[in-house]
Length: 397
Image 1 (cartoon, helix red, strand yellow):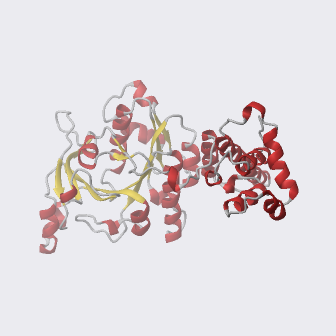
Image 2 (image 1 turned 90 degrees about the vertical axis):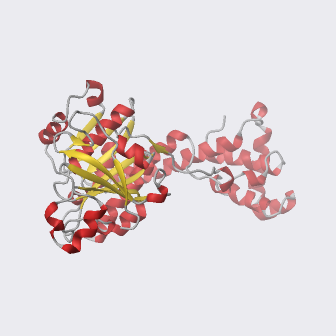
Image 3 (image 1 turned 135 degrees about the vertical axis):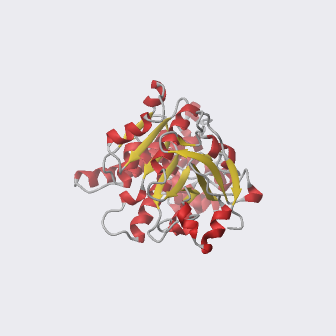
């Protein structure tokens, strides 16, 4: 069986010019030169041997036709699939050679690029496809096990960026804890990668333990890293987690060294977007509100560099626990009417879901009202039961 791209290109070209394969079925970009030009000529209407020899050269024509004469019992093999796989190996080798040379020189290499190449190589084919091969549909949503999100938002996308904003002390880490615990209970074979850039190892472990005992299997599938990693390092580390189902990063502001700029935030948002695609998991990225936020119902513009978040995020959620003193002035009464103040109650506000709200289409955006306790967490009531909460429409907010 031929294994080199040049050999497979000769055979596929020979099968085309002898009428055994339709030229329209061949992706000429995969063929080794000069056989890509030979098939382009054939597709353009130059099909007579004399014309092909004149335009492409005698050596190229002869190599193509002679290659199929030596196939013996392999003439009925799926040579288009073989071409696809062989071209993938060939291009992977070229890319890996370039990356290897950079590494040998001490240059930096994006680890997510290595993971992407490994994923595609494992599939045995390029990620490229024709429109005729594509299927219409939406990115499926998956259950998370966290009942407020599952009931009111339909879960999360199977893969995609989810941005969760919140003011300091609102319970972002508590939400991360509750969400990840629910996820591993729902998905018995999946693991969660937790990246806490703010907390020490002892702090975050204590945060999980204070909310109630977990069984050993669930605990073993929550993998944590509290090192001071950059965003690309996070995805390189997450790529090494077997059976990865979810990544949670707390929080974006800790990933911005020095002066905060649009470019730095954009790099993080982009890395999370591509990381979610390449690892095919939901990526939950937490964010503080900007300094101008002074209380009340938070809006999307309270997220740092909201435009990139709006463009790339599948979901924009916010954690909100209203403060009574904010509503002392008459100017703030509208916010108080939108989301009532109740002791030990908070809200998960959903401002955006790409493709629209599935559960509350006519009442979106909106907020989920939940009991909150720093120890028990989001949605856990005094008796230990978990509630999915009540939906409040923010359509006219």
